Picture 1: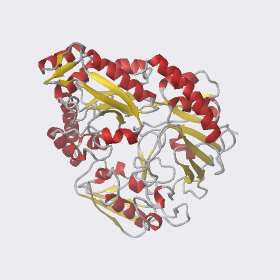
Picture 2: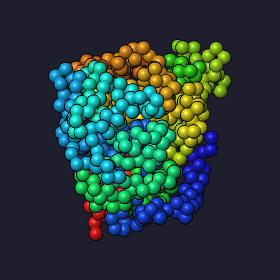
Picture 3: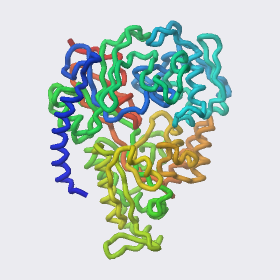
Picture 4: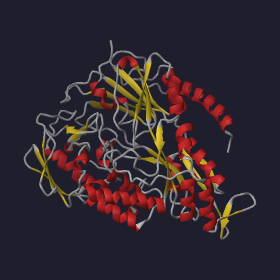
Length: 534
């Protein structure tokens, strides 16, 4: 592996070259009417790191809210409290917790001028629940038994069991039946040319470059004052920072070390968003080394989480011991793991993993070594991977770090470790079920480690199906304590997201954010409410 100093110099040079190339070939502004990030008028351009696979809510886009193209029945405000959106009020819930009734807002239109109604809500949820629809998040709606329209302005959901966080699931965007229902749900034009009821209308999607929007003048919540909004897709952190400094962007998400470089700039403001976003290493069950319980337990205590928080995150985050942050009401006290290299070595010694002449351990002819992949251009993942490999080597485990795109990484996930991310602030079921349920192993990016623990499976079902808070708390405590006994992942840090934005927009706000940041989160979570300075 190239030394950090050499890699840093190469990265800096490459960033400059790429930024000049990007500026020449892929300006955020263009023929679609989006201006560059020059601070001009009523337009804005922000830099994000990730690009969606689809813009169809039927395939999972916007499922956690904040889609600029669509609205859900409900939405989340700045304090993460549910508020009405396409519904006129929060749902009426039956005493047994099995029926949710929503009254819909009248007079709402899709951006093509067609009216929104109950049939669109029914169509959206039924389509997502259809097994023919390629929606990896379908299990999130497992509790839904039926969804029915009562007239044009009332929708009734009937559940199979009293799913406590169901109302939070109804921030899911609503698709128009008259458009999406007339084409192939998985491959039709709606996946890239969506029509919704939201504050913005997509004008152009240049894959790998940008998403351009214009304000919806007929938005039911009032026409946004920011008339043109562009999300520039810039996967490389260094390039994103360079383009922000050059004036091409009005704002961007940046890792802590790069955001720090803007701290003294008088024309920008830095915003920190508390998150549930974690970085973790998948330890695939099918790998002879990473799937070994002793190796997993040793790595769990060999890793120096606080050093990662201090050196990689510059203090902008917290140590992670599982998917739940330590300051959450759902965190299981006592599951914190102290950095203890001697304890890690003893675990390995007792399990028969003995050091060789080169210091790397082996057992039954198997060397304690495996690859760890991280996403190319993501400096935070790269730095976490390098630090993790360094800590592992001190315990006698040889981890080779490799960079690649998701197209390269995904086929290798069954056997190779991955520096992954995840996290949802809404409810523990939202993240833990898809992360740990054994039946979801191999289902895209669900259960990337192929984790298989019957006690965890039972607890996840208990937490999902109980309407009692104490019972749910006990279930998720069980999950977290089982991850101490057999950690199929090494959780490293929970990361605060940092955004740098030009101050011409005044003081902005952030929400508590999920892992999926930049596209639906950030200070532009409510850009429809911004008032640019003249």
